[in-house]
Image (cartoon, rainbow, N blue to C red; front, side, top):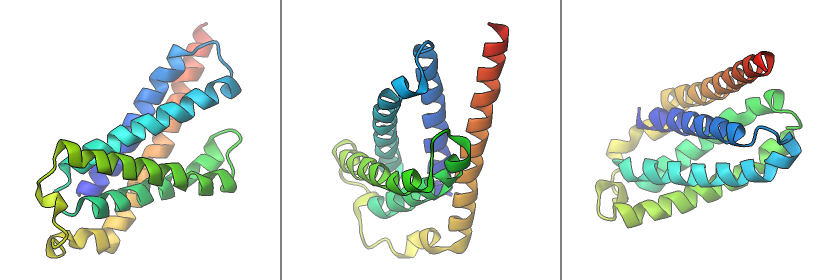
Length: 164
């Protein structure tokens, strides 16, 4: 359940803070906002992986790796939702996700250095990372939160545009 919690948390935090960023730059076009959005998402994902790493109860990087893979797999729906997204941009997006996972996970050792999360011998307690159920529901949660946040963003933006 911790994996699914972190997948949903990362998607929701990224959506909320990204939405606030869009409000902070109301007169900018998507092309003008893209570098800011990319940097903002990099920082937010890094901080989210930092928090996820701090609360991980078993092998920290194994947990974060599964979360990162599920976040990336779930983001495939962006191909159909985000203007200009393609299969290539989705494949390339795995690189910054992996980098933010490594940085956030590494920083989590500075915050919470000596926990069970650093113990690599927790294999018995980490069966969920290998279970089909965790991968299936984690992927479903990632896709569902990606789609839901995109639809919510569109609805809110259309409502604001209609009122203006």
